[in-house]
Length: 205
Image (cartoon, rainbow, N blue to C red; front, side, top):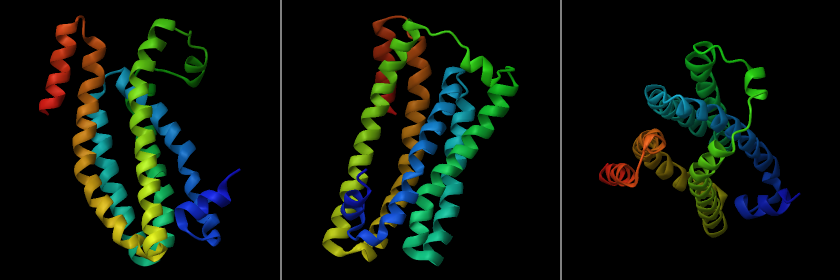
């Protein structure tokens, strides 16, 4: 509905509308990836989560460098969506092997699972932090890109992208380790003292 306005806001020129539409493909792919990743957290597959995070960072970096080097801004647009697709493929492959096949879970089992109000409330408590962080990340990404494009021109996105990519290498290892530890430990906490202990561990980490 707002692709013209959003294209102008993010890219500065309407002729980049196709790039914007290609980039939007990343949204449903990201949602599917997060859904499958939740199985790993539910079954406390900590090693699998850590393996996914490291493998995804390496693969996306290997994808990013040649795309931007050879295709310039077109490569950047392809990477914006391609990185989410790579992440989904890795997550789905690991979940299929370590959860679906191992525990003999079928798609019909998931579809016909009974709704639990207690577990849903717990889920909402966790997902609220994810939504908050995700919304802030989207706002930050769109705003900074818009500032670069409108003040310096779209060709100067080349200045901005490498900084965020190298920065994400560091953040990509630290933040997932916190989430990986935090979710299962909080789920197992029996009283306030345990919860405080978990939070303190994360702050120290």
